[in-house]
Length: 207
View 1 (cartoon, one colour):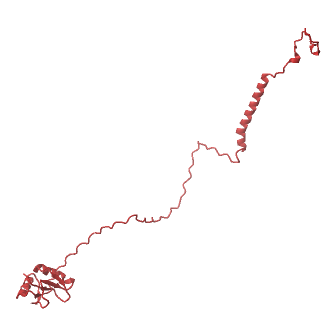
View 2 (cartoon, helix red, strand yellow):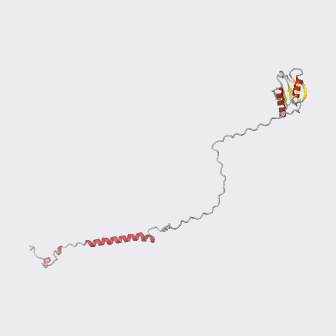
């Protein structure tokens, strides 16, 4: 028995199963809270799937850009037909400036011209300048043996000479003068317009 006075809460049958009603704690059951969590999770999953699949189809959140068509790998790729292009006009390549000075090309040496042939039909003048009598006639006989004709045989009347000389007038008489130089052994040739014909002047020491 309690030593405290009885109150209205003590008016409970002694055999009642309800004991300490005024002290009962209302604790929600765990099964109810777990079901609420599962429900919220399912709803969140459904909303996420709807946002992932439905919104792109409605064009929301893509900045108005049309979705790119999916390429069908089973279809053969179509290559564009080649277009005919007009041929470009041919342009001559610009000549490049030489980077180095080209070396002068070697030109073949000109072929030697055939030696002029002496014309023995042209008469020769013989002037003796040696001081030895008959030397002019002797020289005339020697060239006559080679086919030459003598137009005149005389003594030299010009300045005394120190050696024998053959005078000729112009290039057309040069071949005759060279041939007479070979025959008589006179190496000195002199071109002079004062002589009309090739003139052989045997001087001192002529043999």
